[in-house]
Amino acid sequence: MTAQTIGTAVARKTDQPSPSALIGNNRADLAQVMPSHMRADTWVRIAQGVVRRDRKLAEAAHNSPQSLMVALMEAARLGLEPGTEQYYLTPRKNRGKLEILGITGYQGLIELMYRSGAVASVVVEVVRENDTFRWAPGRMVKPEHEADWFATEAERGPLRGVYAYAEMTNGSTSKVVVLNRDHIARAKEAAQGADSQYSPWNTNEEAMWLKTAARRLSKWVPTSTEDRRIVQGTAERADRPSLNAADIEPDPLDITEHTTETDDAIDAELVEDGGQQ
Image (cartoon, rainbow, N blue to C red; front, side, top):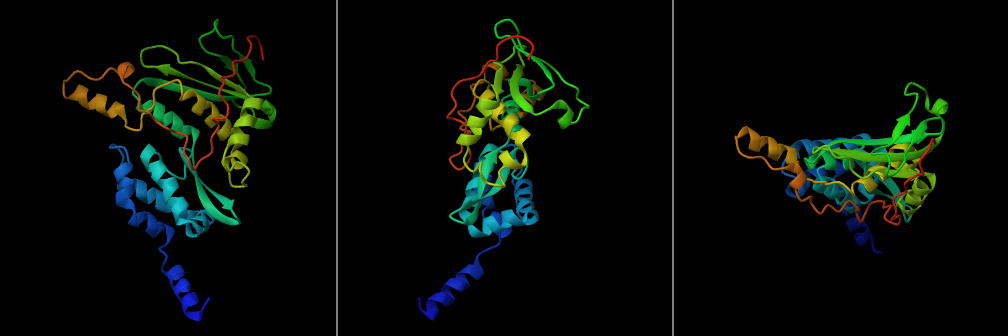
């Protein structure tokens, strides 16, 4: 490599915009894919703040601007806030260099369910060793879970399982998803980037148990990137017949991002045998 080539390479490196500037420069593209209820300026400021505050994220974004924008474009498409439990931005090493991996969090999955307008409430809870859990499929509509909610994690014991279900606006209850340790272990094994020290699988394990159950539940309840509750409210205020949320065809939402972890290797829903657990 000649001195001139080296000088050109250094100049290009120096001219590279900061991660915050890169996000700002791509505001129009990000806004274009956002759901209509999102405020692009607010969302962009949140994303810029995340990479400014986290030194490792900033390093990863500088090393791989493309991975930053891929993750942010997916968060924008889903209408989720990056750098929160709606949508994680995590550094990971690829060929010895940090880059960014985007991961939809359990709060993001739940938000997409609520936006459908067909879901009144979502329950996603972990079960610990000293909790009492009872679930009899076919005889019970939803599980019974008793815990000392004021106890510490150590007092309640290690994580044992997780469950999720939704109450629909028409009064019905969705399919109940119940997963044990083996299912969670297989989900983690299949997840891209789970072995990274920065992965939420290693920094916030309980949240990833919740996310795995919420993700499985999202296959059984309507989801939407657009907030149909706003559409319904506008129709009612205008004294027009509002949409029936139960009849809304859910968006064909693909939450298996090509750049994020996946637990799709697990196809079955585990339903525990009835009785005290």
